[in-house]
Length: 213
Image 1 (cartoon, rainbow, N blue to C red):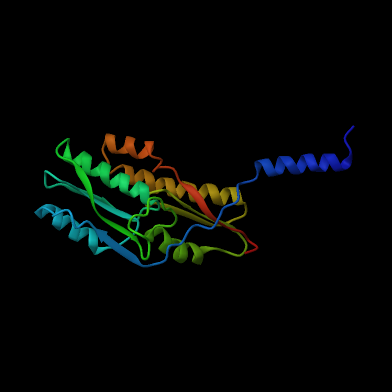
Image 2: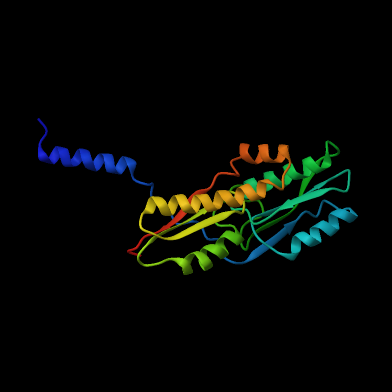
């Protein structure tokens, strides 16, 4: 026969097993951006024009890849994951190159102070950081739950004013996934399949605001 104390412990165990996971504060790399580039590669005319466009709006994490044979290039920026930004730029370069030549890394956008040879880094990309510190924080209400979700690329979603934390989380995920779906329309079949295989389409909650905060 269960005692009152054991019954309470059993209920608590079920609650903890089903409760939403705790969210660690997302890594904030700060507002400043550094651009690094390869001195070993000379850009072809179209590549040089594309790189100039890449530089106009600086947003980490970004990567710029060029083909060493034909005058093709591809870039991404604003990613929340450095390694995936590199992989996405490489894959895009390979797709536009259609089997010609070899694609190589030419330039990157990193948070100011990050070493160029950094292999792994993830957190808030420049765009997600601006929205997180701006619109997301401003919309939070003392009487409700809010949440902020990001993809490994540059999409984000937010919620505010919900009476339930689960609803806040689900809403933020839904908004982020809608942004992802919109971005996928600009890719071809191969690009969409690749993005899904790398987890770029999966959004996760990186912050939850509670009524007590």
